[in-house]
Length: 174
Length: 68
Image (cartoon, each protein chain N blue to C red):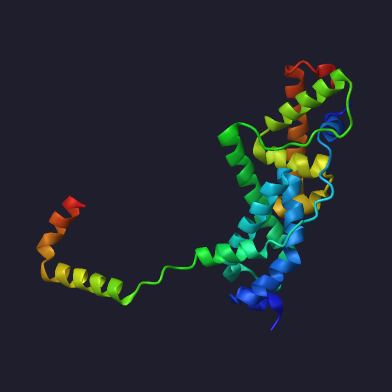
């Protein structure tokens, strides 16, 4: 019997093998969305816990990676929503690596503030499409929405970002 | 500068996102923690006695619910 079939039937050894095969991929996907390595480790375990509990619903004929990425995306979005409720900010957004002149640093701060203020679903699409530059088809599959919906969210994210930057007094920057 | 380009400058892509440790030990602990609780024979005996008592004295159920 194939590995994924055994996993779907609840075989713990098969699950461990699947976990070993896909943990790196799931972690890399989550870290792109939440941009926090420690949180991404916790969320990878959380994602596989959901995968284990949902094993009965998995069709072994389907691609496991895509299914796992979809569960991981929703887990990461839920985490961002929780983080926003608890602290008002998403955690550990990395700063630009090079030292900036003062004005540029201020501008980058304003961009990060504007980004944090985006609705979480738009933020996730903006992170994957604009920052990580992942293909629309991959994002659509991970979110369980159409490519048109991804493009629409991307457009709304850019529009809101421009609007928020303008409110912060940086209209000339965009 | 377009906002998407500005965004990439302010928040560069996360690279590389290699996993630094094997997460299976944490996963295994999580599975083991969430195993269903197994009831011992004493638990079953108490549950059976409670059920028998309720069947013998059904008029006591409203009073019991009132005090819960």
